[in-house]
Image 1 (cartoon, rainbow, N blue to C red):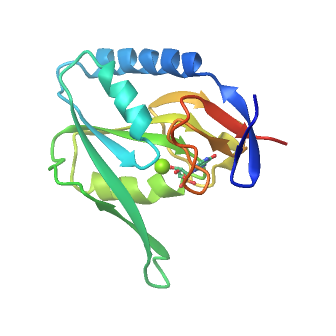
Image 2 (image 1 turned 60 degrees about the vertical axis):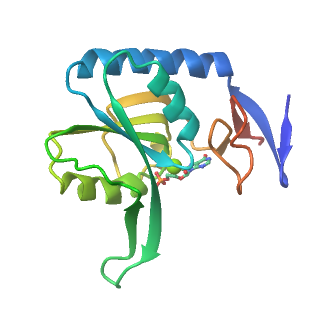
Length: 177
Ligand code: IMP
Ligand code: MG
């Protein structure tokens, strides 16, 4: 069934069942790999709120979670746009940190943000992304745990929005051709 959001039409792409199954697998893998490290998960809002909640409830190990927003502002000529984290209060020093991101598209956001976190000297810094568009990548990011590799088309639902709408959809839709 196609749906309309603002001026565009979207077609179903990843079902709720497939999403949930894959997220459960990721949570099991992470639980296995990070057992005993009491990791700190950092979910990047707004897009990752649903993914973060679903993955976190399937973890079987002790873990903490924190939510941040990234704000982009104009830096100097040489620095271009600068990204800062709003709401990160935890000290990352010596910790196992796992970023939760909805989608890595160009990779620009994490490419800028990860070094800022590394600056705090976490013991490990891992990236979990539900979706990745390899064909859109301009700034390669190492993704440690990936849900789905997807083509370079605009996606909607399960936290992802088109101009503010569509985040509530429990499955993922793709822009109709
Ligand atoms: P990047 O910096 O290009 O990797 O972009 C990352 C952010 O852009 C993601 O966290 C999303 O919020 C947004 N984004 C990228 N692709 C899509 C999409 O297909 N649908 C909705 N939001 C997207
Ligand atoms: Mg995002």
